[in-house]
Length: 292
Image (cartoon, rainbow, N blue to C red; front, side, top):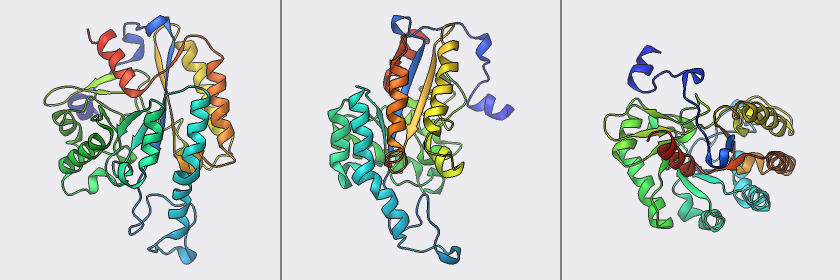
């Protein structure tokens, strides 16, 4: 722990910080992230919902691959429809090859004003890559070539990093990272050159842990998000807070869960003093309001 505090993330108790305010004296910034991944049908699936008989690992894994593919065919468009209904601009966390394999998905997000957040190349932990800098560079180039804009933020597949990742990200021009889930406000990570800001992401309001790890019923993401919102909204009266909500098309885009995403957004919109923000908007606010 002491090494982490010394090398990367200096400890800072929320009670010791100066109060910060969002534009218009808003209490809370809500960050909605849609994770769009690219899985390799020739490899072990990134996640599974249905094991093979006798517990063996098989390739190709048709039921689990097609479960994921449902999100790209159906689930993503359900999520987009709900977000467009509430006029919420999301951040699309993107495995770069989605730009060429499912271009209409990326175009759909861009048409609604969504931010593109680099989420690696394959949906595979960066720790397994032979050359993580090359993977990072390839991710940047693929997204920039398709969208015309290089991504400002990075989220590692599975949120994983090596001990060198933050330094490499800063050297390659990234401005923020979403792998660190240890705060309700942005803060600077220590890097060898340049700067890198940790923007508050979440594993608590994230449909992977909620449904695939903890096996909750469909309403859980709404109930948990509502309860988290109530706490953060109250605390935000003293100093601004940020709340991330993270979903995946094949999970929250399922027919039995989508109405709870609608309910979350409707509940949040009933409160004054809340801003829906993209990751780069949170970064820009931080750079302007906190670091200066």
